[in-house]
Length: 455
Image (cartoon, rainbow, N blue to C red; front, top):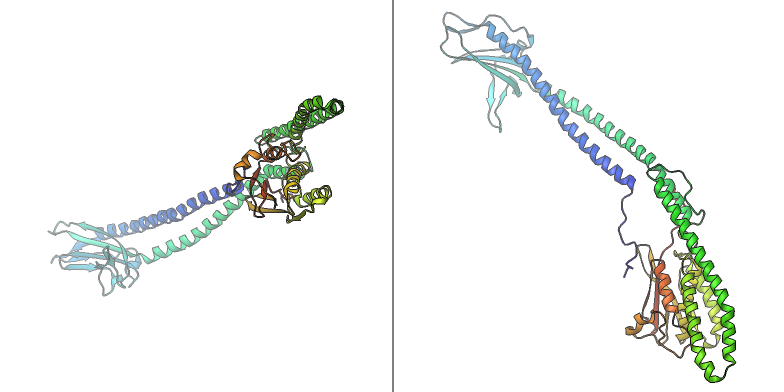
């Protein structure tokens, strides 16, 4: 099961991707809106312009319309626009009074007719083309009924002009769309350059190539860099001070404690046995707190990187000599290319404790392998074929000072120190029954970042 401290969240979009997606969405909305709004405005303009032409024709017909003595309709002058006289020109007019009708020469032998087969009635011209029409009803002094005048102009030229404008418009809008996105991309890349430089410096910090952020950053990012530098300095100072103090304490107590042990050993058996236990407790406390001081981590918190395969081989080589009489075989299945984000000496401390327990309790075989690689975390498992631990006692085994077998030498601090050291790296120690019949101890660690700098 993934560790609760593991980076289990899904990969998030980068700032650049967020800016570009937002810009793309906004520009797309604006371009599409313009692509539909501008043609609508142009169409309205063309329709109004055409209607203005038709109003002039209506006014001219109205001014020149008369009747003869018999009451028949007469148009005293032709319209000034010659297209109304050109057959099938697409410019038509018609005047009707009851059954009497006048029509433009452009209609030739046809008449304006209304097509009602569609959803909306459409007036069609001499060639059956749809017309944009304008009508008016007038009254003459000597005519009892109203005279209906209709002027129509073919819509095809207007539609053709509109399509040409739309084609050119979408080309311009497309160029504008990609031009704006290119500009936004360049602007975002330039604006995020300080963060890119910080990413490079953080990578150098992880690789141990520098100990602080050295670049000058904009005022929005500069406080973050300053605080991180202060944090790194404070961490390194505290760590160095703690290690120095633990070393000084170790050296200061080592000699007096050795003298006391030697003096106690020379006492009579009764007094020696009575004082040996307090000295043993003092030694256990010193070992425990020195172990906690050692697990403070690397002097460069961001650059820790250890190859567990080679470290396990080195530790196993030492234990093979110590436990040569037990004929223990250790099988190291770790990938030689695997690196974990743990300082080398800390890993040796943790792995050494677990391997020592495995050598103590294994009957013949120890297996070291990995499992559960997920979201940049991995489990390093050490398993033996010994007697193991009862499942109910596994949580108790990692508690401070607890020894499940008093017959075997030790202080009962090893597993507790390993657990706290793993926790200091946001990992954990997990004990469970192994497939070989003995104990399976798993250390969960974060896989170390690559050493290459981002481009």
